[in-house]
Length: 276
Image (cartoon, rainbow, N blue to C red; front, side, top):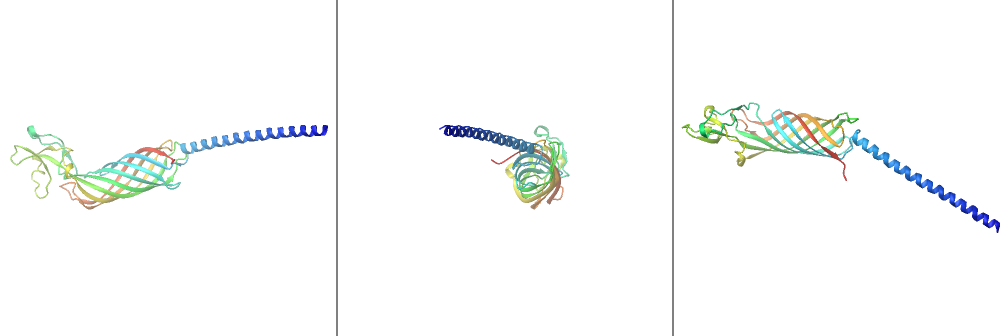
């Protein structure tokens, strides 16, 4: 009987020790898992903050100063690989002829607006562009004080919009002021500086828009200096080429062009995030 009690006692002690050991192992395992998760989160945060850009999406807005005009744009990027990001862009722009010269009106008494005008300008030329391209990483920033450098190549369609340019001009008798646009078959007083009293205003001519379709492409370099990878703060420089279906009449006093080539510098700002 004593032997049975002794066996039961030893079995109880052994079970208790095994239970304590298992409990300690379980607690340690949970602590290790918790610590690993914490270290992983820290590593991911540090990677996103300072290291290689691992975000899957980005959106930004920006402005571009071209050698022949200006533009504003919206951009959406989708990461394809560690080094490549595919992106789509919508841009609205205006082209200006290098010979545009803004002048003050000659005056026209009570009827004159005396707005400045561009002598010889036939049309305002705007473009609505839609395209797709790719950014290819050349050099990562390494830390939050570095600069990420990417090459870009991009192309798409361009919808050219021609808006007639109106002037306030004295009639032949010189006793009234009329709003006129350039007519190549009957230029009238449009090119007579002494008859021009000023521009008719930005709002004139929108109901007479005409469309000139075309294509565009660009090559450039982008420098992103944002301290944190989730932020987009970038400078872009490059060249842009555009080809339209016909010659575009911007000025009445110069030869019209069908092909346009320019250099540009752009600034853009936005944010990045990961897919859910």
